[in-house]
Image 1 (cartoon, helix red, strand yellow):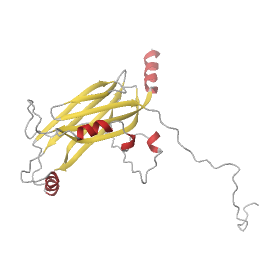
Image 2 (spheres, rainbow, N blue to C red):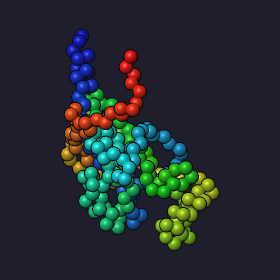
Image 3 (cartoon, one colour):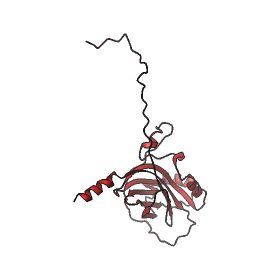
Length: 238
């Protein structure tokens, strides 16, 4: 009777640090697809999770990057910079999100969800919204609930900047999503390998690598360091 309980306790102790990195890009309108998507889809929901903490190199403590979970890592700490540059240079793709962070995954299959948002906002929605979940059992798994929203097209906009300003200024005029493209999958992964999740309109690249956190740096005062004593201060001794 004790064996299942002991096995569960062992799984709970199976904690491993990982660095997780994701790239999400959308395919250009010129890329053909035979898949049909509903017009003006009904509202949906997804698992809402943790928002990554912003790291400001000017004011944030860089030591936190080494041993604190769920901090968005700066570019020099990321491992897929070459891949994101390749996508950015390709005219058929537009990179919407490139994020990396570190976290602990336990071997109990619990899913840790991370909120994902990207690009401009229209009528209370962002062009990309949803979440990604990560879990660990016998294998690592990624759970994707990503939604790419297509908003009303502004034909008179002469540039992307002009269109985004128009959408931002007048987003309450047409509060609808014309079409939604959803990437909902569960994929088994291996650490240290780059995984590719394909979709007619979205591309998701994921890499998970084991990580060893650094020991926190403590600033200790040497015991033999001289201290100044104020001789004019009243004594508290009785």
